[in-house]
Image: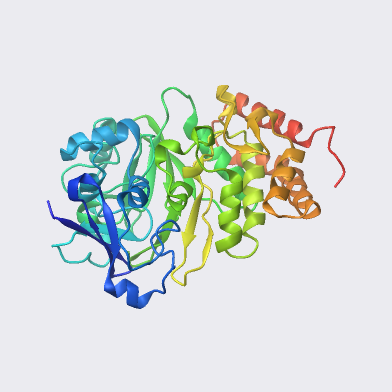
Length: 413
């Protein structure tokens, strides 16, 4: 394996990672130092451009944030014959297609070729079925020439949608464009549940990843279009840089829940107020309100992300991984709302109080929350019409949650 890894972004070699003694450290290149002013959050808000080398303590949360978690990480480590605790060599093996705009390659290799879906390996139905069937032993579809990475503990398959609409394997650094997730065995109907919740958010006017559902050999999957990829009609792909809240705050993924010491909504709001475009705090409040409406208690720090435009502007990424967890009797909140720690105890007033702590005026926060709640019922109806098979229990849970949020005991603005 190479002694160093090169981090490429937008066709430029912007940083070098060395893994001496298994402790990854990062240094921005001379090219990056010439092109970007000191302090630019090029790779991450936690790794702004500077001449000094970043130590392992600052680098590892960002790199671990690119990698799968739990059993998915262990299975991939077995496939690529690397110790699952060895972050550096896992990135060495998987860095050819990561979340955001970066590509990580051994420093003795040439830079990545122009990104295109046309370099994917076409898949027929039988081959696709095999990939789905083998997700337990080959998470993400990693095997042979497919070396890529995506965070998360849930089983998923990364594929490339080709210009004719067919699927391809993202071989040899071909960018993946879609995420396929099967139903979670312990939680029935998660495919319909997630599609329904994502559609509710879209009908409420929020930025949200596009989803569809499909079946492969009788197995249900939700198909999520990656928002960090822009695909041209000719198959060309532009990678869009992004990072999740754990990466932005230098937090290891195993601390993504607030109860484990992870970031809070107030921490996210402070980052947004400092660095993101105007109105981003209002967008965050809409996100939090919708998350409460659908009873999603699993909106942890890795389920909020920040987009980095090439210009340097920052903004909240579209919503993703929306799921009604309350219908499975999972009521803990991954990130507290005004210190409320249970999904079914959140009220509109507590959401408003949380937003006031961020710096929004009470009257503006009240208007935003009330607007979402007023439009929630028709959004739920429209999303239900789009979701062919949906258990009544999920809809009833949302109706109960919406009634609780509206509440009879609302205080005046």
